Image (tube, rainbow, N blue to C red; front, side, top):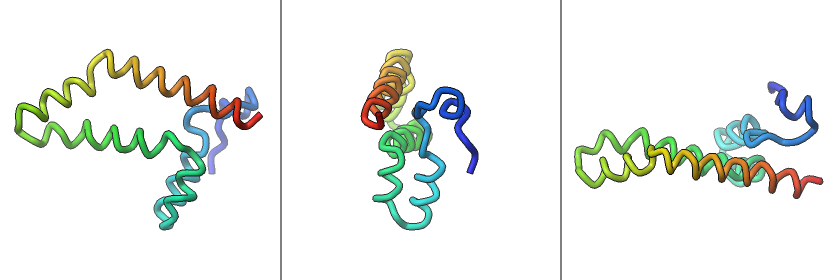
Length: 94
């Protein structure tokens, strides 16, 4: 497994720390273990799946949902969630 450069330099977990182990556990058939490595990863993967598949639907509602999920506001909210997650996971691990 690759080492996280952020953790190596700072000693803190980055938002993606544990993602490699989580993906490996998920594909090994253990979603519970995958969830324990990185709680944010399943939500981010679902978000990416939705914004990838929505354009394939030709309906107007799908286009509006896709536009909302890929807007600047959504990007700022996602960034805020990632920063919040980074802070919380490092406070818990202290």
